[in-house]
Length: 205
Ligand code: URA
Image 1 (tube, protein in one colour):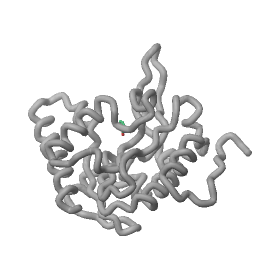
Image 2: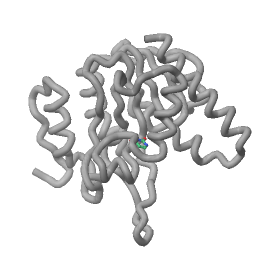
Image 3: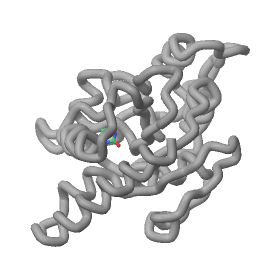
């Protein structure tokens, strides 16, 4: 068995089995430097799935999705949209943290399309097990992981798209994008739009 191969169980019947296999994943080199794979979390009966990009520094250390600054913004926006995170299935397009070390800091790096496409195998398994009605893509990497194509968020936003398994896709920005906006007025407009996108997912479910 080579370094980039993973033994995949013939049948993955439960999220526990899936998560165990994800934690052993060596399908791409990202596992070499990350602390651990970060699996999705939430009820298997969730009607809405949220898909982010990849774990950040905090997520990599804690082993849970969206527990750092982007997660805090996401939690606030979900509450404003009337969504309870405990009812949602929250996961990422890529399961390992990709970063460059700068002294003691670990700086996020965008996953490549190749890395997203390799990790898509796991996202597809999660979708097959949870079978959500609505999937919300947070940012461009999630969009790629869900559709297998590179499309701009602006071309997909505000419309409902049917995915290959029949789930309906709501495309929106990534919360980290909102955290990076320097202009306060623009940040408010973008944040309101983000909350509106999440609220539209709630109303579709
Ligand atoms: N950003 C993501 O896309 N996912 C996380 O889990 C955390 C930050």
